[in-house]
View (cartoon, rainbow, N blue to C red):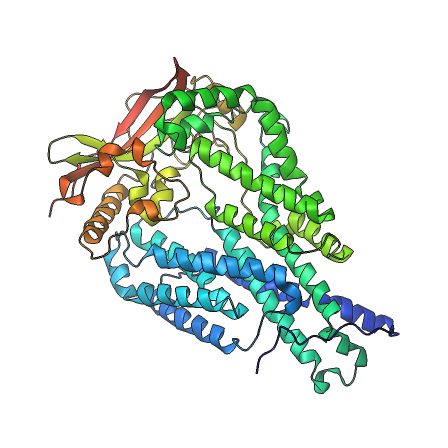
Length: 573
């Protein structure tokens, strides 16, 4: 016996008189799937911040417990009236199932004791995630497992590899949207099933309407637009982050050197256009020429995205625009929001299957409210900062048997690659005194509250941006002590090198470029490292540079202003 698709009768042709209490109850029950969808989000947020998912006993019990729970609810089918939401849930489940399986069970291990204690939990969990993703085509309960496992694997990576600072911006919105919709659809199907039980409806006859198609369509519409609103909140809050920067609401539009991200991407070896310096330089000059209009367009789309809910076509158009924006950012800089692109594509696919007037006014209002205020519950990325072409860039170099130092491609670190593109072993702007410029590897300024090392240099992120636009932020020579936890790179790189050696000897070796990175290392920008095998490397070292990036004579110029050079880390057995 199953509950769900195909069971709902049509709405009665004769209007039914309902008391005010009954009307309120029915209106509230339309939000029942929405409220049920919020429960796993609140649990996920708590788990992401407080629960040690990598605890061996907890991990094993959770994996089997969640798998059992998915099976117990396998009798619940997708509601026939929620085809659009089903497209998104199934698409996300399959995507995360494939990603989860591709993550593998081989970690870069810096904490051997913790990794050994986990045992085979990663092996069987990723297999369960893949199988569950396939069954999610038929039942919403199975969609939950690959979504939760993906988050679990990220936490294990953080704890075991020694990376510790893996961002959530690229994948958390995907997981939350999927969990919200999957659990909401489960609740809607169960509500339809319960409405047909006389024990449930005998005292309040009008509750029979809970099982009608119109009621299910209205509840599904509320759920769908709320799920889209949860994702659109990422864009809205990113717009808010831009207008609340400390230089004033117009400072990002009028003064931020947004085009600098192209130079930063090339400096990190992530820019797809990097195969031709002259082409990248030409593209940089073109983008810089239209920088202000481009900033206006992006900010307007982000701040006004909630208005798209008023028309289905507007919602489709704006979602497609965001995908085009993400693809453009990737081509120009190398920053790839693959998870967001997939989710946006699924939203477009879902909405194109619906009619223009498919949504009730209450569903539209729900989508708008969740977009603007959903940050109180959902994880929303706040992608708003100043950019810079004077940048603090940290990276590893590998020493070959021939005595050559070769820059390591960040993609080599697989699940920990984000660390090399982000804060680098405990470094954050102004966490401690630093002689380097206070930016991320992408030149981001103002992600965290400013605490300048000296008011004589700069008293705000805005002033830092003004200086770094001209590569005029003062740096120190030499840099002592390091502005990061100097003890951490050694254990981290040893674990990563050992993993690479183990994978090189495996029967089925999957290259690190096939991992779903947030930023890919372009192979043509790392040819020397790509040609190496783990056995060719005898040592590594960790470097931090403050660089000034510019374009001159059709070439990208990288001028090192100061450097912190870490000791050689021997990896020979």
